[in-house]
Image (cartoon, rainbow, N blue to C red; front, side, top):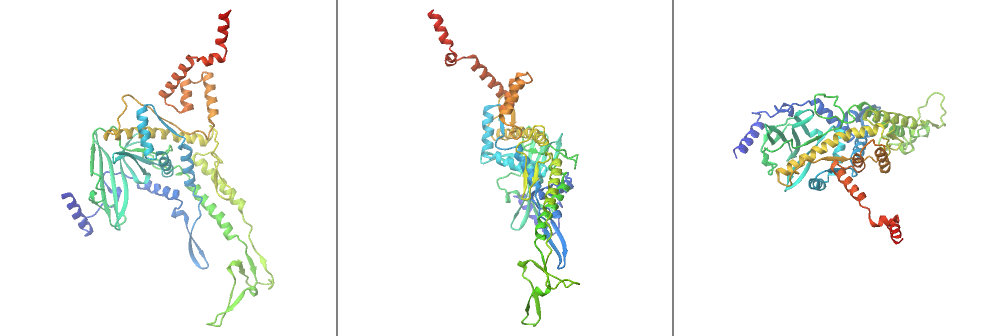
Length: 500
């Protein structure tokens, strides 16, 4: 009661100008933010959405004065992010957990949260903006997964690129006022602390002053202290690309962060390609005598005009121009030149983001991808595997994070022994399943790999699952059935020998 009253008094004092709110999030004493880096994230987000005002708002001058238009865009940030996310994670990917009971529980959580679809969407956002976060939580006695994009997540402390503490930002409006919800995830010694705060913003730029949490989130506690957590209650995912913009930061960068000039050039070229058809349409010069005229009934003046649908220009009377001559001045369209330039830039972009040359092509109607069949030695496939390594580690952390929350709320318990989490990614773009099986059989035959490793590779099994399958195969081979013996005539031969 006292806290709410004090908060209301602070709001009144703030409106009267007697106290000042926190000017911006970077002024908060517990946060160290590289504001320039978050501006970069904002730019990547804008490019992914297909509209970046600094690029796409064009001002130009005509005889009618200065005008403004929006540049056409190929929106390649969306294309490359979506393509890479689809190549890496789709419905064919399998998450295998060695412990059967835990596997069933985790897959129930994934199924209830539509994990495959949501994770693929946010994987795309991760590649576009440099990272994303998943937070397991419990609501109505059900374990749910909350997804957070890179622009709403600020790390506070980290160790060897593992983020230990962070704050999550959620901005919302109510009754014409703007509010900011801050959810802190902190460590107080061995105790994990989750703290929730809401700030009211009246100026548009300031974070504002703290207001009662109950006013907006009656079911959320201001502070939760957890004593039995072994790791942070969230998992941060990022592309497997070194952050060359801020080498001291644990945050990731967009896959196109180092290809901005190429992306800009692509949009300029595509915009020019579109305008080639608009500005290069058929034009005809006509003498002024061919232009229709009408008398203004109010002034009595003669006004010449032409039908805009006829797409003609009025000719000035110049020198020896034939007064009765009509001239076609239509320009030759530079279609092939534009397509060639765009394809050249697409190859540069592919190189910069880790795709093979020719991965993207422009045919005059749209961008096509050529990643359906990719050799194991191609740059695209190596890039795919590189991101998969980091992604698998993140999914392993996510399983542990889910298990930690489930134990806290007694939804299900941890296995007695150790468990293993592996991810079998879809590599069908590189080679078909039959080719992979033939390859593994040849390796086993030449004693270059073990049967267990071959089974793990072919089926995407964990080590324990592979050992179990090997055991079953050995048991089947050790017991010859009567039908198999009869098939080779062994029983018949013995009967003949007995009769003689």
